[in-house]
Image 1: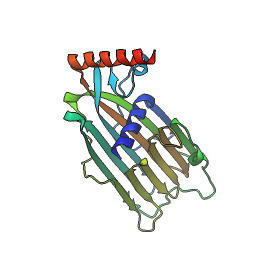
Image 2: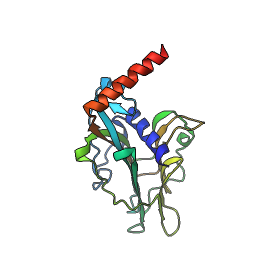
Image 3: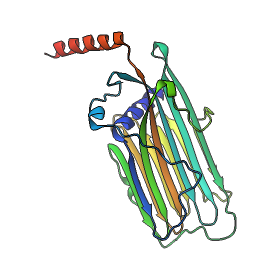
Image 4: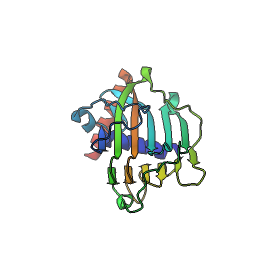
Length: 267
């Protein structure tokens, strides 16, 4: 699992700088979950990304990756569904990789008997069949007064300021929850096939997928919202933290010698 997810993490490094798509219905006064922290974006110049190979960065070496995902859904009757998780891969001494994982899922029953806003006469479909190499953010909405948000961001942190996930590291590779009648579900799974987050409600679905390279496809990240209802508040958020540390002078010299030898062999 570690190697596949690290591959997916490097793909994220290259392709998910500050992506966001937001659908906001006119007249909607509240925000999408006031308790959900806003994603922070650290800009990275094109010339920096152009030199990025997944192993080193302008004299720094990437020593760790933290991927955080959060999907949240709030219905007008007070019912909520939340799935979140984090994966940390940090390279220590002797190039040993230490992995930590956390996953949580919860569903809150309706606070009253009011409608959940689902519209049986509305439909939002098709996005689940889209397959891309790279990043896709799809929002399909059929209804009124809805908020839908897909966000993905990346930042770089020095090793001395290593990022700590807000979720407790519970070493659970999956979590799931559902309402009493099974109409609202939340789940997250980490595995050799990548990461999958999924919310299901009577008013639609929200999913996030991080898949590593395999024989069938290159690495991909997908965020999908399908809302068939009214007054729904839905958010997909993904953030990648890359931990870097300076390379020593000896390491830089060794890297230069290695590259020179490789160039000589190619000629």
